[in-house]
Every structure is written in C-alpha cells, then in structure tokens.
Image (tube, rainbow, N blue to C red; front, side, top):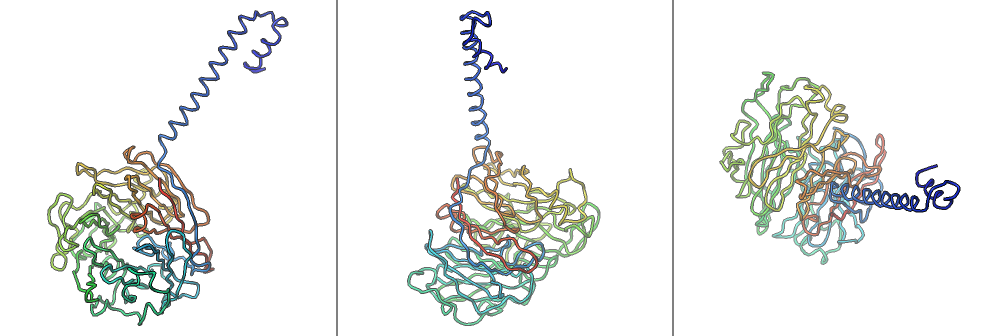
Length: 495
C-alpha cells in the first residue's frame, strides 16, 4: 500500500491500527504539505523549462502553388528551392510573388493578394534547359518604375533575363495577371549591359535609395568573381558597378597545399538602413583540403559598404576593396571573422541577417573537429556530424560564435530570420525551425516546428517578414526519382 493510501486507511480505521486521531491528523497534514510541494515543484519546473525555450512560431496556413512541380535531385538539392535564391518568394505593395518550374519544365510565376488571397499562376516563355539545381529562378522589383525582373536557368552559362511592363508591382490592382505583362523574350543581357556567358547565382536587391541591383558570379566555381549591376528606373537601363571580389591571389592551407584561384561564395547581400552587409566563404580552385571528397571552402569573412557596393570596408572600418578597380582579395586585411581550414566540409552560401542595432548575424555549418580533423566525404559526414553555428558581431564590435545544440541532420543549408525583437529563428532543411531569444543572449535554442514530408532546403520571403512579421517559406514535398511533387508556401506567425 502506498504512503498516501496507508494514511487514508489509518484515518478511516484508527481503531484497527491502534493509532490516535492526533497522530493521523499530523500524517495527513504532512501528506498535504508534500503534495503541495510536489505540485509547486512541477510548476517551477515547467516555468524553468519555458524560460529556456526559444520564441515560438505558429503555422497559420499552407497553400499549394503547384501540385506537380518538377523534381530531380542535383548537387543534393532541388532547382525550385535553393538557399541562394534571393528571391524565389517576394512581397511588394500588398501582393506576394513566387516562381518555380512545373513538371513540364516551364518557368512559372504566381501572385496573390495578401494576407490570404488565392494564387494566380502564369507561364513564362522559357523552359528549364538542363537538370541542374543551380539553374534557379530569381525575381526582383524596381521601385522606381514598378517592374518585376526575372533572372534564371544559368550555371556558368548564359543568363536568361526578362522584365515586366512598368507599374505591375507598384500598382498591382490595376493589372490582370497575364503572360502579356511579361512581353518580349528572354535575353542573355541586362538590356544593353553584357554580363558575359558564364553567369551563376543571379540575385536582386533593393537599395535604400530604391535602386534595384543585380548580383551574380562570373566565371566558374574556384575561379570566379562577384559582380554588381544597377538598374535606373527613369531610363529603364542597367549599368555596371563592377567586379567586387577577385579570383586571383595566393592561398596556402595549414597542410602546405596552395591555390592561385578561387571564388567568394556569399551568405547574403543585405541592406539594413544605409549599410550593405556581405559575409561569405572562399572556395579554392585547387585541392587544398585533406581529401578530394571534402570541400575546399575555408574561413568566414565579413565586409560592408556605405555607398551601395562601390567601396568595401572590413569590420574595423578600413577600406579593403573598390568595385571595378580593386576587388576584394583573399589576403585582404581584417576580413576573416571566423577562421577555419578547408578540412571540415564548411558549407558555402548559407545565410545572414542584420538585427535592429545594425549588427550582422551569420549561420555557418561544418563538421567540428571533435568528429575528426579530415572530412573525406562531405555529403555523408555533414549529414551525420555536421553542425550549425551562430556567428555574430555584438554591440561592442566583438565577433562571437556559438554552436546551435540541435543538429540539422542534413547536407543542406539553413536560413536565419530575425524578428522585430531581435529573436532569431533558423529554418533548417526539411522545414525544421529552431529559435533563440535575444533576452537569453541567443542561448535558449529549441525546436519550435518540425515540417512533414519536406525535401531539403527551403527559402523565404524577406520582404514580407520585415514588413508584417509573417515568415513565408517556400518548399517542395518529398518525392523520388523524377516524380513531380507539390510546391508549397507555409506562413508562420513569429513569437
């Protein structure tokens, strides 16, 4: 018989036990005190657990863009959803836009009126050329003339570029959603600006002065350069700002192996206020890593610009590059904020964001040294032992780094999101969301959402999250082989 049961028996049958009522009352009082203490302890434990939980997210809706999007796995990813797409999902003037390829390989663009309008889709005059997950679609808006710009289907090959009629984005209610809004054919140039025949990673960004910029890599992996162009809405023309990272220069790994060519992979191209923030990692053109099965990526760098990408400074404020004439070199002083040799499977093109104080936050991932000092198979070892790290600059200007204590369990990359209170949400592959609060110093990491039937990496709508606090995530359902699957958008309320 339990202690509580025995005492109740004593109270009800005192004569059968030989115990006095006074003794039994004391036992019952002790039981009541014990039960109260247990209840209080449970409550305190619950409070403590809540105190160490990251900010929550609430799934508001999931909508389907296409029940039959093209599906093939290439470079561990999907062509419809890659981390470096900035943007495949974009909001502007109360409407949201999305791009993808359908099962027939056609480029698609859809829009809906926010917050909950239905999607309307149209087919653009282009079909995916090859099964390569690099060949994503990216879109941007030029505020000065209200055009939607589309760049796509390129991996060290020619660009496919198209823009809409004027006013489509700034006065969306005045236009029906029709293919005729994107008149003309795709071109390999930005208007009259020749961007060459080896373009990869097309991205758009809006400057604080409402100019639209185009960011891309020229050349090839391990021997390429970051380039920047800018659009003038009054004339409808593009101009070249120039090359801002260099492929040349010497690098020697700790092992003694050296390389004379490389490219800079960026984690983002982010404006906050008047400042432009860029972080990234270098990839060498020669094998400087310990094994050919690894990655030649090394170090995390950070630079910023206060003149829309013309001149670049390191974290100490010293000028380290000038676009068009003196591009950033691997040997530039003071740009490395987290040193790492090329033996740990460091991933390129992860993500970055900037908090309300103007401090950059970066997500990187690699296989830590506790799992070995030489990655011989980056895909399998990142999947098993890869870990994500939060790297940021604090208000005193010092860079800090913390391992996120939740494994991504994937070869793929994660996306960092910062809300209006500077809480951080990291959207990992398979739509697993982990978060940490600013009040904890970004230490109370916890899993706040786990996706279902999601394949690999996701991308998200930066403009919507900054304007109304809703995290819209574009993802694609799991499939196998080349069987098409649904392309979807999930909307989350943060905190």
